[in-house]
Amino acid sequence: MSKGENKGGGAGRKGGGRPGGASGRSGKPSHAAGSGERDGATYGRTGKRTTGRDIGRLEPGQTPTDATLPAFRSGFACLVGRPNAGKSTLTNALVGEKVAITSSRPQTTRHTIRGIVHRPDSQLVLVDTPGLHKPRTLLGERLNDLVRETLLEVDVIGFCIAADQAVGPGDKFIAAELAELRKLRRKRPVVAIVTKTDAVQSQVVAEQLLAVSRLVDADDIVPVSALEGFQVDRLTDVLVSHLPDGPPLYPDGDLTDEPEIVMIAELVREAALEGVRDELPHSLAVVVEEMNPREGRPADDPLLDVYVHVYVERDSQKSIVIGKGGARLKDVGTRARAGIEALLGQRIHLDLRVKVAKDWQRDPKQLQRLGF
Image (cartoon, rainbow, N blue to C red; front, side, top):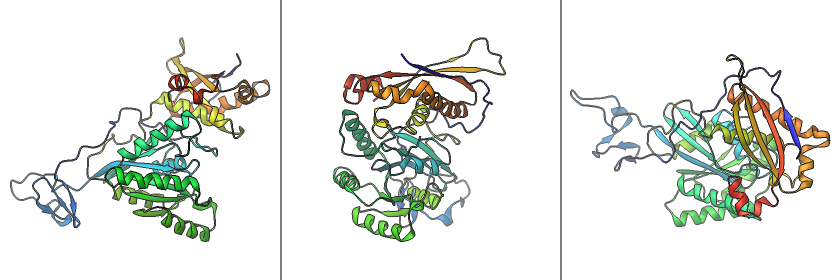
């Protein structure tokens, strides 16, 4: 069994930047029956019409109700698109912190990741999903099922189409899925998002906007650049405008509800994805086996032992991940450790081991064991 270790000695303590844990509530908001908005005014349970000019005007003896309080919007927005459309990078830009791993390799995201955007008048919960595609493995089928289930549960859908790639079969496949969705359930708003506008000239962006308008029946179309921050705030405005009235779903300050153990596994996988050949990223899976405080450490300098297994499908892939003399695995450990220490706010000892789980993407039992 090959083993690579990366000890945390010499690394400084990194505090701050830690996303919120799983303390936030999950699930859809519960809205009062009979409340809603029509012709720009708010109607409460009593049906009495209240405009913005009425807010704060209470008669003697009158108590505030949902009809007299400023409206607060909250809900879920799902980002969907073909693999490598920039969904995870956009999620991080909208949240303002890294909550999803990113890679130049397609199909990096393998589960739904929630990022939370807080505003004084709204809370937007972004659900980053795996790329929707025509599957070639059982894993691909399960990821597609996960995306479809998510689409049925959110309040607004953001359809991401990259500006630097012509509209292709993958985009048309998703557009057809969204069209079918509108037939099955109540109509959900669709915001078409043209991503990666920084990668092309303005004329190409204009042509892509026209192509997207022909591709999908969208309520809004917004071009953005997550890397440059172009129209990121504007996109938030548009997504929030489609949310229902409701209370905050998560405590102020929470940026994600991802468990730390999942985020640690994702940081290791992100580091392992860099610089590998095209076929290998799909074969990588990461599981955190144990996390234990190191015994005997001083209280002002704790150390956490983190044991992680990286799974591949073949022995030849194992040798690629480890590299000559273990050099590549050591590099993976160094980069992953930096991200994990920033997440946890303390030094760690990261123990990485590479194992073979033959054809795990097609094996139901192994998929379950690996968390899919």
